[in-house]
Length: 218
Image 1 (cartoon, one colour):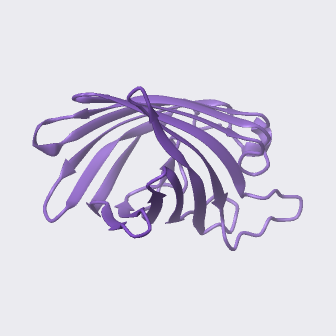
Image 2 (cartoon, rainbow, N blue to C red; image 1 turned 90 degrees about the vertical axis):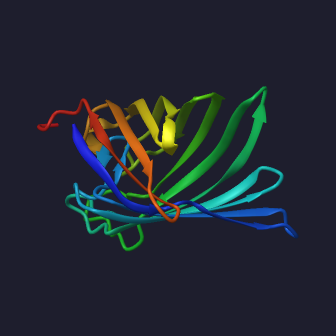
């Protein structure tokens, strides 16, 4: 189990471009670690990240994500992702069907090695029953990270709105990987619980615990 602390983070800044029917959201983040499904992408080192989301009033959107990264045994030093999709609601359930490309600019596969970049399709759902927000995610990649074959991820969780703007959130997910030996880890369970606290001038700070059932030896 690992501890995580997000340093002061600016609240997501939104700007509407009414003439084009667009909403642009930008979110910067500083953190003590970059964790993806319970696994550190920076070898337990700090991360500086930026997310950009451009959504049309129709529900169509495109987005980008940038972060430093550090994978053992590779020259990976940054991650740049691109995404697109469609958001809509059915009977009060908010749905997001999309796809993301995970890219690692500057990475060079060693002799006999494998490409790190990969695509993933996702379906996200959320439903609010105040003060609770139920969330779910299903993701599938035809060729997961480092060409490890089919990858499936299923996650569920809840966000709880607390007094004074605090938010308590928990997630539980499971990652299936077709070629575990190539990926470097077995199929695994990932879990997290964290608290976000608003501070001043639109900033917030968060901290929590993240972990998996992967042993140190694995």
